[in-house]
Image (cartoon, helix red, strand yellow):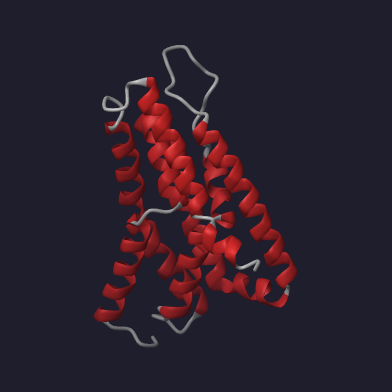
Length: 203
């Protein structure tokens, strides 16, 4: 092992836990999903975020990040796709509403959609790259990537549950259609605001 210590483990878990709970695109969408669809219907979305991000951390730890370093055009294309996808998601949140009995028009994000979203989420990239570059616990790259990814899987799970639960708990408070509309547009605005660090890189 390289640099293995209890302080390194504590620092890694603290980073994973705190960065998972802080507001970002994932948590804004989980909050909106909890409000509009409830905890049970948001489970695929929650698992997609947790397991999709875990897989992303592992693959970056295995060297995928170096591929984008060698082919910056590919990384640029990914960022542009991420911006467009986030704009579409913001529009979708802004125009969503609570699902009433028998209503099927609106639906929460699926497991695959939430998993795929991690690859165009700027905060997810920042968290994954920082963790892999900073916390070297094992000399073996595969073992280290697995270890860091596992820490994020454990730390991220309570975060996704709390954000969805918080959204669901706001249902009564926002039962008024105008209040709900204001909330959804606010979430869409915050999601768009999270794009600023990425958009700023183009200038």
